[in-house]
Length: 404
Image 1: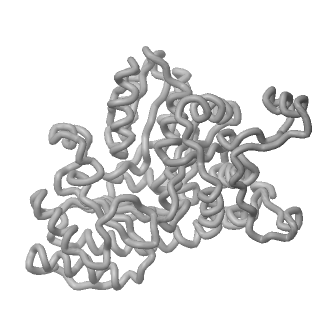
Image 2: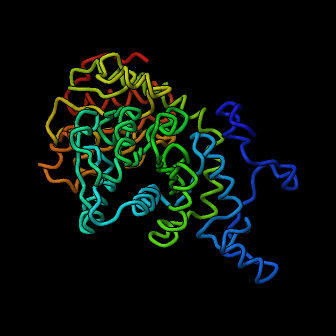
Image 3: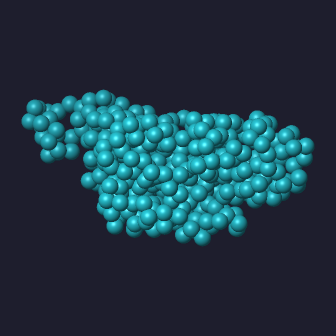
């Protein structure tokens, strides 16, 4: 199937023909750890890359290959590598391209474990890590050098929903032969395709929207074939061993089939929730690309198909009251992760970014009263009603009327 077909069609059909698999509509699951050869010569040729035989599950399997081809098509990438987690994708990719003495430039706002990897994995190995507000592309121009190997950013960022201009950053990176790596977890390839905007590598926590049901842990890294081969045979095979399981491959193939339908509803619900929060007197700031007062809305319209299912908002409250607000919710669940059918909420300063010092939280633009909300697939009236009762519980009144 060619990339001329629409996204939804490729998400369901790409790289698989049931009639070539005994008519099985659902692709078979391959869980074998190793693969047999007809003879030594055939096995030797496989190790030399002279045939396309599978060797060992750490390098791939037939069902994993199908998943990777399908995901590459959706992301408009030459190649894809599936991994055991999003951090497996990030670490396998970065270890493949950096060495002591190199510099990695990263955006100020990052997923907590990514920040920890930079601090405790890269820095002790003699790799310089510089944090910049990459929403201001001029800062990258001022700091990038020939020692810069990678530039890394999320967009939107976790947890505060800042955007970076992918195309502008890519143009700067390529003047210095540096690779631009974008974490596209929040958007998925349905809403944003960084490679088409110039990014060299794209990573995902497939645990989130791509799986979509909170029942797997997995990741992806995508890019040019040469780069993905290097990550597969060095970063993953020899460095991290972050091998995806056959069962998770199957769950992801299932999840991708409904990705477009689910994300459309996530976006629809999130828009209404963001509008609700933005009118509350108890909310200081609402960060959502679909709001007219969102500072980076022109950029969002340029590089995102829709505004997404994630919202960040700051309460007119103390850190303690912000935590109380989360605790007061009843249907909405206090949990990390995102992109599930359930609406999930968390207080970053107390949870996902609790390893940051107070100074680091401020430095990385994470306020103590910031709330991260992953809007789910429940009926919008029920989501709004739960938020409303939590406002009343903590502040005495909601300050507004519910209107879906």
